[in-house]
Image 1 (cartoon, rainbow, N blue to C red):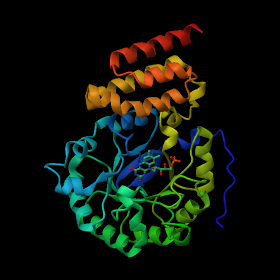
Image 2 (image 1 turned 30 degrees about the vertical axis):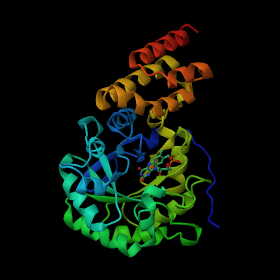
Image 3 (image 1 turned 90 degrees about the vertical axis):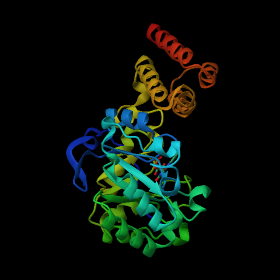
Image 4 (image 1 turned 60 degrees about the horizontal axis):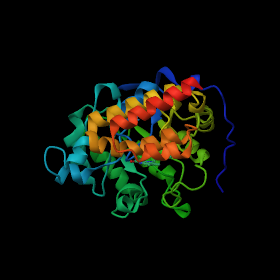
Length: 342
Ligand SMILES: Cc1cc2nc3c(=O)[nH]c(=O)nc-3n(C[C@H](O)[C@H](O)[C@H](O)COP(=O)(O)O)c2cc1C
């Protein structure tokens, strides 16, 4: 049985935030320990920029298909893939995460995108979704540490950018090979490892095994990021204490809650302040994705923002189903005024 670390929250978030250099990603100095985890479907350019502004020191893209980059229309695949590869100076440093099932294709894709300004190329070695793992990519690669070693040897030979890997603890409980995989990465040129403390079969069930992440940190000499179960600011220092990692990734805890990177409890932030960020986020989404896709994709974030708003269910429902950007902005102004008047 893995030893589960006691999860005492602490209030000393300040030490987890900005520092002069928390760790290095190749030649890039990362000036804080808080990292936006890759979140496919959420981590577009607007969200990454917002998280950076609130204190994330490094932000990841969601996973991007190497096949789409290599075999899709030039220069960078289908329009959706090309959009995922648009970076803004405000969001740097960005780690660009690729997934694929063939080393040659991942290397070719990495070579193609390497000049787009990202700080590093990351390889997804943890996605358990059938669409990804079922095709031999993502967490499926964990079953073959020698293949991972070969992939990283090839990537680091081919690229001048640093290359990192994000892993889970193994495929299932019977094959928790995280130490073998971590050593394969570190021995074959990886600049950093991020560890989500669950197996692929576990999905998101149960608690992340922070002690296993600590074992990875102890077993390699490159920077290690811990991922799993940061829900509120107090969890940040607890995860750092439990693992001694160089930084922590925040995933679900950042959805509708970029204030977590500033160490703030969103429930304690006046609604008018939150509503104004919701409006700004919506406008950034519309500017980046266009009015139709912008509003559509924003709804996922809106659900997160509204979940902790305290607004009545009917009002949240009305906002979630609104299909007019200006009307939604107006409603947010009204709730803003109502909250301010209260
Ligand atoms: C909606 C969603 C999308 C995710 N997308 C990715 C992804 O594209 N690549 C990846 O490596 N991990 C992905 N993850 C895993 C997260 O990066 C993170 O490791 C996991 O959610 C545990 O951290 P958390 O408890 O802070 O959410 C995703 C998780 C969620 C919930």
